[in-house]
Image 1 (spheres, one colour):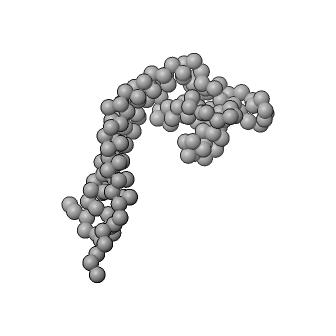
Image 2 (spheres, rainbow, N blue to C red):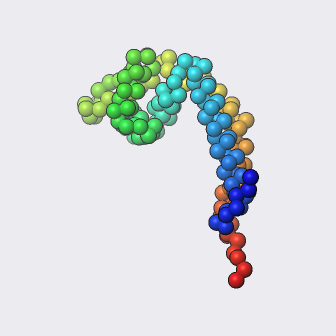
Image 3 (spheres, rainbow, N blue to C red):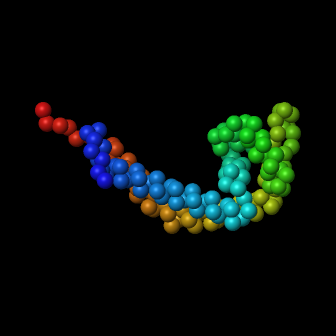
Amino acid sequence: MSVERNDGLSPEQYAALAAFRYRLRRFLTFSEAEAAKHGLPTQQHQALLTLAGHAGSGPATVGLLAEQLMIAPHTAAELVSRMVEAGLLTKARGTQDRRRAELTLTPHASTLLHDLTEAHLRELRDLGPALIAALAGGAEKATQSPPTSPA
């Protein structure tokens, strides 16, 4: 099927975006399956990765999870409670602000995340070049001037 629009976008740009989205979906599907293989719901895997990768000046908190996972604060608090119950996180009163809970991965969670991260990095090494090529193809064409119609 061909897209017939005079919007300045080429069939190649549509194809590049479609290829990029397909490859992203493949990676996300892989990620979900890999987390499930380790007995971890996807959102908990994302939370562990967020906490382990936190490079901010302050400690990791429920608010950080809410922001990074793009979920409501009360949803993040419920997620943290489930993860504490599952033995994945510890929660302690903040040293600077006692109203905040500081979150830390347990040794079990660190081991799980290490294994998952290795698998994800292998997958990205395989899938990465195709993702980059698809993205570059669409971005390259998007920066070119749109064709002008004859006067």
